[in-house]
Image 1: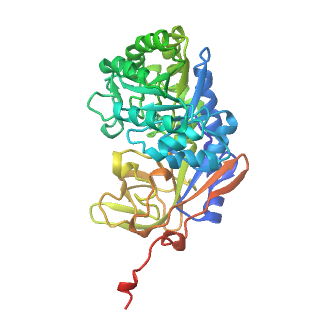
Image 2 (image 1 turned 135 degrees about the vertical axis):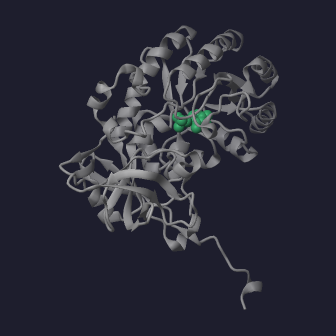
Length: 435
Ligand SMILES: *Cc1c(COP(=O)(O)O)cnc(C)c1O
């Protein structure tokens, strides 16, 4: 559920007419709904009621400072994967004492910084990393709190680029070797064993793989609790969102009308399946959902530049491109595209929806049926809040898009569109070439 809907014929985010945002700040612009994020956060908390839960929002889904502060205010901690992400949390006015630091390639500087900032735990992915952490903790005179990421070897049934819990992925330590890794870790002088972690993939829409993974790792977590006194089990993130019927899924009636077997995974169903498996362990449970918290809380606004009618296909050419929203090009993913101004009297149009970049991959949708829209009108890409801005680039020397946060009837620019001057600020022409 989310707070994007038509009021009359105009697409709104909460009580804000999105045409007003496009008018004031231009396009391409990401717009986020604060209320949708808060709802998603509390639905997850309620779905897992009965457990002691710490939600560590996965920053890589969307790391805008305003969103981070909003989530911190709601009680979130963070799942971090780089020194830059740690600095973002601090810049947002929060701390990382309940947050965790993951990733297969943590540098010395990042590990030191995380420990200095009092990170709740480092999620370790290999034995050489453990040695490095032990050494750095020794030089700082602290014991580094760690958990080992175990790879449960389950098939998350999602896109190959976002599955992480199979034994042939680069992530974690295979369950069969994990007991040995903990034994080795326990011998390090400057390491404190605090928990165990797993994360099997992203955009999961069925509960089965989560259940399978918890059933596999749960007994191991119980052993670790007995043997080393660990206090938590992080079950990762990965809860999927609705992309195909994204706009309709904002309405509770849409969910109610679906037969339960066809209903995408909800936090309630996720909790109902997992709480009975997790509760007997008596461990605190960490959640690391990113996409679920922000994915359907954001849209990308774009302007129609041209409607190019071809002999065999039509092309709707937008001012947004693959550099702004790379998911369709990278993961072949589907984003619903809807007009900001609905007009049911207009004929439908079948067109490829494309950006201006000189690359065939710069295509958001092929042969998509959409209400006819023309030059100067606007559309919104639904479900663009996660892995949208954070994966954006400047390809083709295009400026990074703007970001806007909506709260009720107010909206505010929370990241100004990049300027050409800042884009080239670090570049220089060597004196040897200046002639
Ligand atoms: C990416 C990631 C997440 C978040 O995944 P979502 O699908 O966005 O919920 C959580 N934990 C780890 C370790 C990750 O790498």
